[in-house]
Length: 135
Image (cartoon, rainbow, N blue to C red):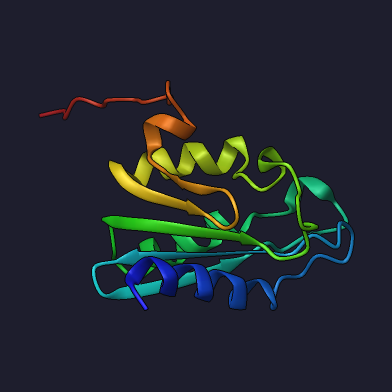
């Protein structure tokens, strides 16, 4: 089993731990930083705006542990029915923007049952803010 298959399998397994009592739509994400893997799940809240997606949980977990370069991310929506449209399985806009902050433009974004993408394909014109250092 290659690295990509491992990441998708881990994302599916992580989704089992999602907290999704409102949508019943469990999502798992796994990122790879070198030879280390970090997983995340969607965590819903009765105040919907406080809900966080699996992709951001996985990314933030890696960043919190000092990893700054993300090589790839895998996302799996295990409750989506077979034949669900691709757009219902894709990361939301907020997650895409966070990915743009931490993934190299050539990093692989693997969406279970959809395909493999890069940043330019899923967010062609990402917001960026280049700060100049202050002496």
